[in-house]
Image 1 (cartoon, rainbow over the protein chains, first blue to last red):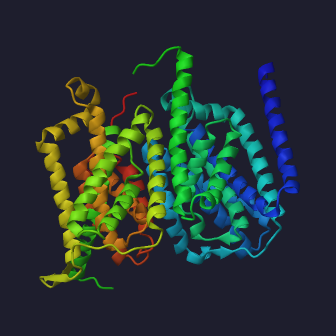
Image 2: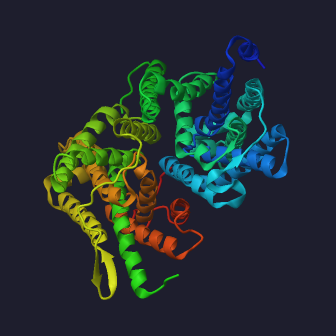
Image 3: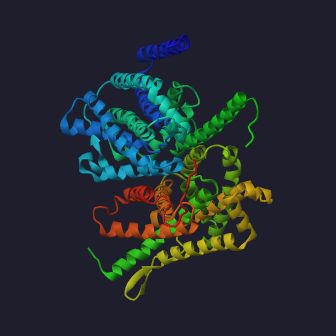
Length: 314
Length: 296
């Protein structure tokens, strides 16, 4: 490890420690009901972080990560309701089950390039609630209720400790060989294959890991909402994750925190500030998504010009 | 469970009418995909929005004037959208543009709920739901009317593309933008016209669907999924394929949900997902699309 990367690592470790300290102290300084909002931000953060692995790093778009959250959420709820598991013990399993589902989905996904994968994952997100309704163990349309309650601080702590662990694991993963392989195949699959990257294995792995993150997020969502129902995992959830990712990707990895906060607080404040209509947050998300893409495109063009020293002519 | 010839015939006809709705929306998707390789995720929500406009207009005028006025508004709106929202990213990757259309979908979905409210409304149909009897089989006039409207639309579009100078320019711009520019075709405007035409097709499919499924801001989400299935089944770059795919899928979906109890009315969306997956895995170019050969 050379001096520069040591400096980079210690700088990042310092930022992480500062954020962890803030997260630790926060419950003493804010009112109790805010902690539920923060817990919700943490759930979005985990899911968006996972989505970033498959979309941001391996370059496979997913408009259907809400489906993997649903798998995780239902795993947690079914283990608690039908098998009386300890709540915390269900979370790793929620990640595991969703991760396996992600691996399985990653196999056919190999065959679909860009916009086609968008269509398939979108269809997955739209179709998931009706599959859940059909299956008896899931409690059908009314879903399952989890009847153990904890303090707001408990939900906050569980969510952000999970987020912290998953962030560190993910961050380590993204410093190592897989992340270079993913970025290589995102930029050019052919070039990556020619350099000896096992394209299929890495793409499937990205889907699996990313779905596992979504699964844990779904399990936490099940705890926080005292249960699950098909209505908890609409197609909008999947799209909101994409909004959070695109907004958050404007900055560094920590920017995903901003993306997650954005997804949560637009839903809270848009009805308060503008109008109570459920359409308002949706419009805000749409506008933000379009503007973020415009901004990213403009920034990309700008940095390109810096690097090449001239305007690109195509 | 009834399984008589007349019952099957009825299911086929009502499948053709929902198929007509899917075909119109699928055709809209194909029009945009063919010229730029972009799949427009906003197509369904644009259709919902224009159907709400039609709903408002119908308080002030009778059905067909409102229908035509809606088509005009949709056309203008589609052209304007391409010029203002898609144009700034036209040189970006296809995926970037797809994400912009996703943003548009959110904007129109939210705007529909914001302006008109989220409640479910009934929507006038120009056709009576009275059945007519042909050889012992009862067909609803509404089903036949929807099939007729979809067919007229397809024929009009076919004539536009095949026999007018504008149609030729539109096709040229889609096939070879660089050389079209050299012969003086304004490719950018042709793309915008494509968006306008697609918006009209979407508006018609929305207005045909609304009496069947009722009007609400999420009306077209499921129909968009079916239109994806239809377009992919027919081949995303083939307009004829979109129509064939739409009608085939409509009939198949109706028969499956009528005669396969396990699917029934509840698992229709997963059928759409399955069709999309299977076609893409087995025959990615669809029934009538061109096989894509990629040079590396």
